[in-house]
Amino acid sequence: MARPRRIVLLRHGESEGNVDESIYERVPDHALKLTERGREQAREAGAELREMFGVERVQVYVSPYTRARQTLGLLGLEPARIRVMEEPRLREQDWGNLQDLDDIREQRKARDAYGHFYYRLTQGESGADVYDRVGAFFETLHRNFLSPDYPPNVLLVCHGLMMRLFCMRWFHWTVEEFEALSNPDNGEMRTLLLGPDGRYTLDRPFDRWA
Image (tube, rainbow, N blue to C red; front, side, top):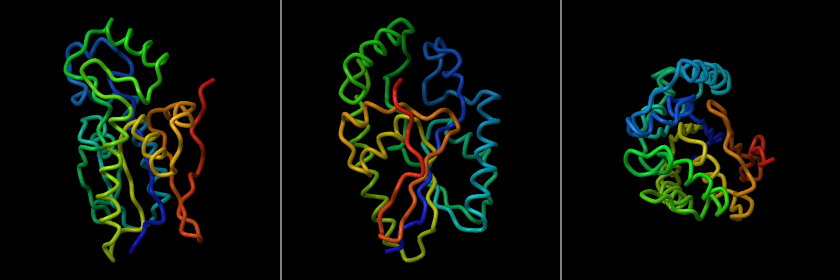
């Protein structure tokens, strides 16, 4: 079993929805594009990743959302050293179709009060639903690890909530531990590092709610 030395989680760069909430009324969430700042964040993340990976091979799993795929395209990773798989289970938490701005704001308030893990968006998913998607993805991931030529690095280009839930599932965090943490900023990374004992540790913690 060829377990990777690193599993890197990268949040996409800043998107149009991060700077203009009203765009959710006109453009599907999955089709939102990076802003110029988001493109720069992706390029900066790429420089860090190229230094980290060096000449080693990388297995990439990317959310099918436009902003995630654009982020991947701007990382500047050497095509000959990466294998890319689009992975729908890494998509953003579904809000459901085009959205009403006032409803978005009310649901966010309700979710903050109720809890991000359990609160179910009216036409979409709860955090628990996304957690179940992560568990299904783990089955694919661990099956891929069985390949003797599996790359020593894994890169997931995905979303902030997905990153937290991935780590919650991997490290067996409780719901209370998950709820205490906040999403990383756009273009931020967290890395799971394989230790000599065969266990993974997180390179740095997620920020906690103030």
